[in-house]
Length: 566
Image 1 (cartoon, rainbow, N blue to C red):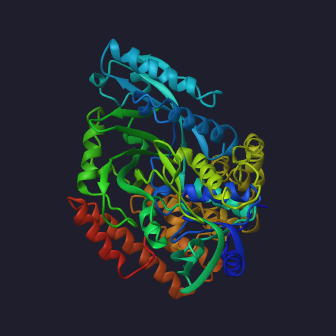
Image 2: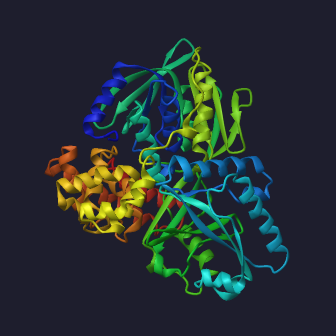
Image 3: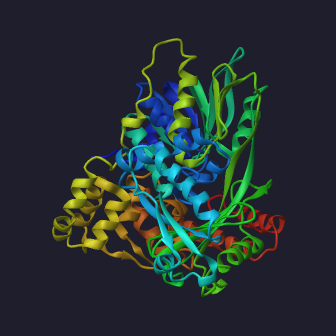
């Protein structure tokens, strides 16, 4: 049985935060923070992780959903960075999370007949080679005719041929939550809605943190021998809170993505397009496409970065330049925005580990900061951060083992997938539904099938969100740490970005499903639904605004009366 991160487990974790002293306290529940917790606990250390909102509530639920080497870095001759990322991609696809990370093909259209095919082809061949052991298929050169056969939705004059290559895809929020649950499975104390408001010190050393439990409005003093700040775009704020005299500088860049129906773009493959600034992806996502992204500086509210009319128009303009049938506003099912934590600077005297993408520093005794990086290399960042932390413990600690530690649901996944028809017969669910569960939960899908066996109504689709079963909402609250309606609709499932109404129709049913698990009365159910509705309405209103300042003002105004909004 996997670890159940339900309300009872949270209460026990809060008691541990108050009573125990930990070897490592991790601040931040994004993919890097979750990775740090797993790396540290799998070395035999006692570990706590505190997150101010929900697991993956920030950047780690709002990415392009890709696990990739960064093809564009080859043009910059950064072979080491690409090799590192491709190695991580291989580990995730084949060993660590084969149920959550899967290969996906991309078409790279060519616009020039001679030099571009050789130039891009050589780069993609190197991309295949740097990847090491073949975790994904190798690239293919396609003629104009064969390219249009794979992508009939492209304008004939948009390409003279193409190269098809492979990367991998992940549900970023689900993967982050699963890494955190895996850490909890090995003994880490993981809590959400627990915000760091200060740090404990003895002399010149950081010895823990002051944490406020936002659910009960109580304060906890958490003692730790090492504190690791893994807060992404909030790195600078946590540094200032700690009073660190040296540190890193992280700047936020906003990336916006559109979600459109699969039948609106006639492609049998993903698509990557060059733009004047970077690249634009069209990424398969079940019965949808994800189209993005933008890359613009963001200096406003970091909790809910808002997409604007200008962001949406930018994406539509660029993708429509190559489509036979252009996309319109009416085709947009969902829009989401996230902030990339880009490393802008580091105090060189304090830097312990620095790459082009991420840095790990020890600005004060007892405090380690890991910043920058990309989703694909979260495990490397986590390893580097724990290496620096344990060097200050004054005792021998085993080396990192996370390259050999699969996340929850990976063990036994292939065997269950091969037996999916038998599982379908036993559960009474269609094979397609069992495939869906295996692709989201891996071998833990058996726990959801057990819920359905106990209550067959949980095997029904959620009204208003037919891509998910009712059991998934219940499991989100009983096992996956969801505390609010937002957590279930935005991150444990992706109803918020996949449904045209952003999940408003599904909200009452989902709230009713999780209420018994979370102990909600009727008033609390109504409050959760109202808060979610306000968040959705604010998000839609912000998208009509012309610029960041106006959109941000709309979001802040909506958030003021309610703490928990989507």
